[in-house]
Length: 391
Image (tube, rainbow, N blue to C red; front, side):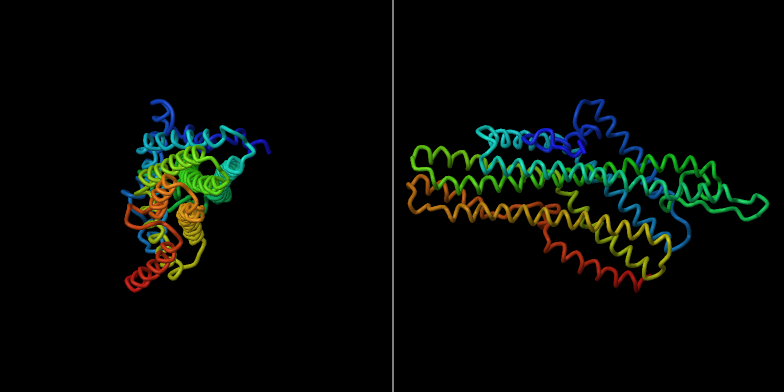
């Protein structure tokens, strides 16, 4: 399919930038108003009613509604954080574009250029694939309750005193409308909700693709530095060696700056992701231990979504830290003992910088990696035990 083809393998995450442009995070002031409208609509249709209008008097439905509210809220909050830090993202983007341009400047057949081209193809393919997946899944999510409720209404016998209860997409109220027994009110709600969930799915895709693309670019930038360090050993001239090493050190510093920009942008978003993951795990466990019915499907879906996102985030954090350590190993493996004194000093400074742990953190308190993911599982189980005894 032409949609999944990469138009320019030298560009920095072009599809991700296109998604941000469509959302309105990048572009003119009028584009940013579109982004503000999207956030407002989701808050007006979903987050606001769930926050202020309450739920029906049923513990199971309250647990389900709160879990859904958590997911919708964190999607909005994370995208608001991305929009708020759009200027810092542009600074990181300038560094990456300069970095990529330098790598592709000489030749497309060098090892580092080939690696970066493959990285770009993988990022572009993931971004387009995840975007397509989110749009398909939200379409199925929107269609199910609407079709089911329409069939209930068409098969409803008006002579029967009992009126059918229509199936809402999520457990919530919708202002003054009777969305469960009045079909006109339900239709108004469904149209508004379907638009809201479509936009929420797009925001979810944007946030995931944004983090994935940035982390992957930074990881492969460390890979290119390691490759250049290994190839530097074949350089004979001292002047050429000094120039090559100075260029590598500059690229290494710029890579650390990109990682720092990414961490500053998503500092609190990562913390919110981890916190909400624990809450939804506990909600699912509490719901399933009390009741297993059709409504449990929503809880299980939320569990799968939040777990996949958190696990993916931990994988990216672990990979980024590993790639940084790989640069350290490449510096150490370089035959520095045969190099001039000036080269040794430069390598020493680079080695000292590479030994500092690099990665993405949750509000600066802890690194996000697979070790943290294991701690989340233990913490969630402990909270669930207390919650189970309370309920």
